[in-house]
Length: 487
Picture 1: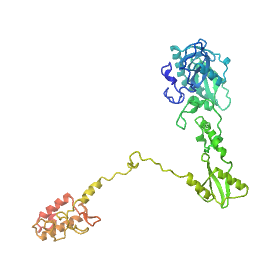
Picture 2: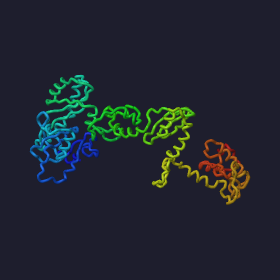
Picture 3: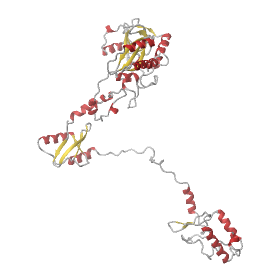
Picture 4: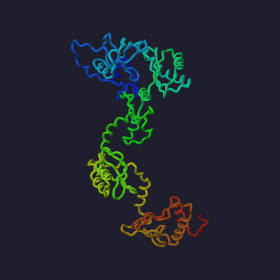
């Protein structure tokens, strides 16, 4: 870009994106013209065109006479004659024969180009120019304060200092005429420079300040748009847009300039669409117009108290309108719409495969399984305490039935809960104590058996570790002791 070759080293700051020369939309060099003739060899007797084009702040471009025939390249900083005396600093934007074409396009005769090019900008000129540019922000805010004190209905939007720091141009917006004579006197006393006031429109103000539009790109007026055409709400009506001022207005407060970009295409498409079609008369009733697709040449109608919309071609709508004028009515519009719907609104199934390996997009949305599920499953598959020692193939104990009946030998051949060799009386006392422990609320153990689909007991009542050790101690004590002594 042109900013990369500036003699200032840092380059100029773009008016739109403020990316300091690295933007890709051309915001640094608005209205830039590429010199396609720069690599061509000119004839030996060719005399270069003596007028060059110079660019200043805010996309301001002017023509200057290069009477001394100084060799200049695009992007260089030069010192030129000021508008009211002194000198100004600007960038060379165009040289050679293309300047002659630009003057012809802008209808600028050769007689009107009177100001001259002084020299290439020296280091002292660049330093002074930078100091002048650094004062613009502070000067603008001070000028706004002075305007508020005088109660003037105007907004000062930008300030442009001349390169020699002897003159400043104030750009402002206002709805009507403003008497700012007293304001100019106060600003001249405050800043000690020559003052020039220039009124601009809202769109010009947005172009000078720059910004990002609702489309996510730089404003057109701050990058490439130079001439502003009038925009009306009729452009939105032709494009079937909702007349919402918040959506149709840009940052300047006016209607968006992009409403005119596709307006010609819509006007060409609307030539074949009949105007003022409110309803069609049929034998079963009146069908009212709902919407129109101007590019597919389709119009939708619906009968009262029916939710279905009937699509018709534009040519058929014109035929029905002609029939209604003659007093004729078609039978029903639905018969024609069915054939149209099967030919136009057929949904095509894409013939591509999932490139991500047929993975489900919601595979990460599944809730994590409970960690205790695996442990419970292991406990479920574990053999029951009452089933320990049961041979494979032997039927399991039914749910709700005690693991071993009182007086029945256990799996090892003895009584339940009693070591082999103990008498049955002691076994009965042990079973009675076990029942008392179950009724005790302090003992925490499962009291219900889990029954599977096959009717097997998969989880038998089990006591805690402390309760089991207490029961074992009780079993070893003599049975002739009373219960209060045992406790």
